[in-house]
Length: 67
Image (cartoon, rainbow, N blue to C red; front, side, top):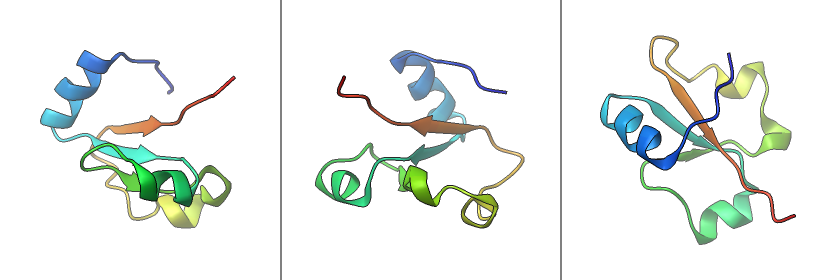
């Protein structure tokens, strides 16, 4: 299930153990990233790359749109 959340929700969920995933290109992630986030670029997001995620913890996916 996908749910849009706000900044305060991110803080609360991460404090509660949520996993923070950035789907930004690797170059953007290398330049600036959210503390504690791991990078899985969107074009690499598949069953294999998400296999390492813990299924019993919420997942927060972050991306940006410059348009």
